Image 1 (cartoon, rainbow, N blue to C red):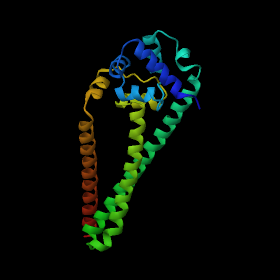
Image 2: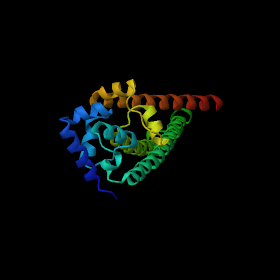
Image 3: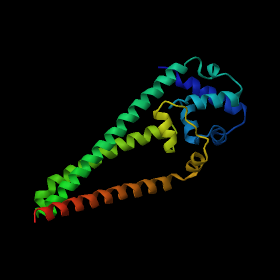
Image 4: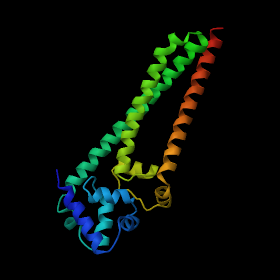
Length: 213
């Protein structure tokens, strides 16, 4: 594994020579301040586009910046790409299982008129599926945060192994949104998804009840 601290030290040194703060450098290479901090502390790697922008800004070559370890960095990025794809499949799979459990729960409650005690195992199973899906979703969000992926286009390009363009207008707007507002939006979307699942579950149960007469 390469010495990430060496790259971080290079970025920090060149930033200091230009008299830039972490916020100032972040604005010039279209990433967040947290991303600059992660690079400088060796927590994450800059991607290829960021390296090119940094080398141009600092007036040095990419090789000088990474000390010949670009291939190792690309391997680390490829590893995150594979992991994100697997996590996305896992999230979708467990959410679909949760939806199936909710439909089955609705059938038990509405069509068969089961008691609370009888439906409890199904409810717990649905809750478990949701919990596992959220675990994988949080894991995915962590990778997105580390790689500074905000918009759907950025995520799509990253997963396809293409150069990530963070200089778009939408990307800049998204990076200006406060963290608390993003949390509120995420919670809202989660509640909406749960409501949709409950709606389909109720509709499925009502249909079964109608067919059973």
